[in-house]
Structure formats: structure tokens, C-alpha cells
Length: 101
Image (cartoon, rainbow, N blue to C red; front, side, top):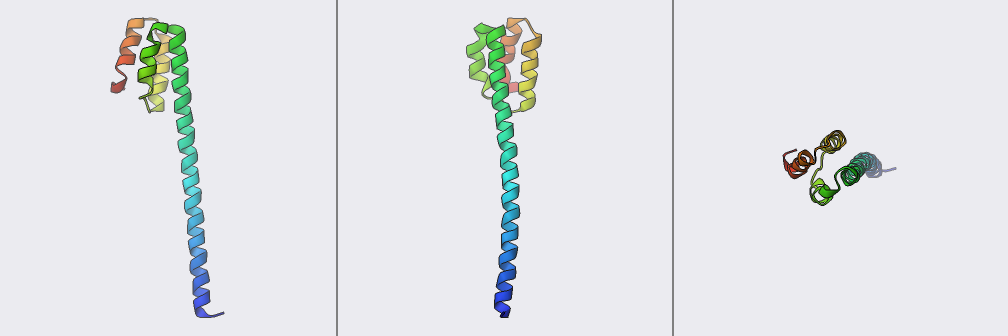
């Protein structure tokens, strides 16, 4: 085997190894992103159902504003608030002030 062939095979193997690692990392990152997006969508849907059940007059407002929340923690906090409050005015205020969350 020539020196060139040996060098080529070594470089080719190194590139393949690097691409395999990059692919695995990208795949893992995509899975995490997909999981988070699914969790966010699920929490948004749960929020809308909770608003519909507890404060039906606020459903339209909730539909307009809940979509802007991107943080899982904020969605969970709002869901806990919906569960714990019976004051529609307080809930309306919370839904109107989502941009400050």
C-alpha cells in the first residue's frame, strides 16, 4: 500500500469518525428540542382546558396570550395559578400580563 493510500485512509477514517460524532450530537440535541417543544405544547393545551373549565369567559384571552409563553416554568406557574385562584379578575390580570412573566 502506498504512503498516499495509507494517509488517505487515515484521513477518511478520521473524517467519518468526526461526522459520526457530529451526527450523534445533532440527533441528541434535536431529541431534546422536540421533547421541550412537546412539553410546551402540552402545557399550553392544559392551560387552555383549565381556563375553559374554571374561567370560560377568559378563554379567548387565554388563547391569544398563552401562545407567547416559551418557558416551561412560566407555563407551570400559570397552570398552578389557574388551579389555585377563584378570582376571575386576578386571572384576567395574569393572562393580560403574560409578557412580564
